[in-house]
Image 1 (cartoon, rainbow, N blue to C red):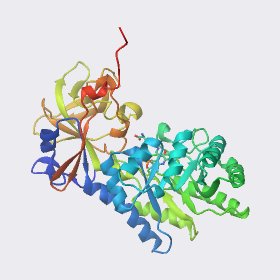
Image 2: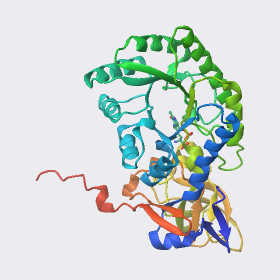
Image 3: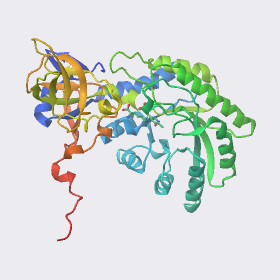
Length: 422
Ligand code: LLP
């Protein structure tokens, strides 16, 4: 976790606020974020690249991947820090605009953009469409013609490098649905060049997520630069090179490269090319800036396992169920006494509903736990399964608590439904 999450006087705090105070005021389960941790992570990216470049080149543009955590408070914080945004839907664009983000710093990724989404983004004046297929290129040309506009285009290429991460979050291999194969990219650019309503501005790739080594990035960059050179030889000059997101964080004992190692390694390969570098970081900015605060409902001893049944569940944080992901479990008020090995599980009616397995903890009913590293892909992947209202979200800022999303009510959950006529 970020240094803003610390034990103080025997109790886990976020900045200057005790987590028990958050639970008392807002209940549980609640996602709790640290404004200082978010700010530090964003600045670390910016300064790592500035330092590695020695101020010699155009500053890179960081486009926060909204999908990691789309809360408006987080988007507005990053917007104020100068961030751009990587979106994958019309909904995410609406959030960026509502949060005061600048559409001129938005890139639009995703393999299935609808015509309506393309038109809305075009009218909003986004920076670039990251196009992932020939049919999408043709659709964008038609939409741009209908809107009497010219769409800025980058082709997402698949560098076919193995990022050595979980297969569900690998995206840059030829077998994935994303991007276009390296050897097809040239043809797409040639087609794009003939389209009157498209303007080629860049190239992009995204090879996967939770990457903990630098070499997949440098390999991908070399592959992309080969293409940039081939394009230049045909007279197609690019303005930017977007290397996507994917930088990993520490959940347990991973040792991801620091921002400065990442920046130095990439800039060493990049050399002094004129294009602006762009990145789409998600997890690395928000993952360790948030916890999921939950309360122990029951301790249930069993013949084979002991269960700590808590009030958060797979619908709140689905990463363990989906990827067998590890999240640290931190007692908010650690107690003395014998530790027992528990599976920490939720109330949802699925055996896959677990948050942590085989953790030695000293617990009593009613205790508060913080599920660590829950700032990325926690709330954004949550659901209402079992008609469970989604958690509240609270942003800590020094000694202040801001409720940045109220807990859902049950009535809200079925407000759009109706009974059949008699
Ligand atoms: N750019 C593109 C085109 C992406 O598809 C993604 C993530 C990102 C940027 C941001 O990647 P990041 O820096 O956050 O790794 N739900 C999974 C992660 C899925 C990532 C999908 N794409 C998880 O909880 O681990």
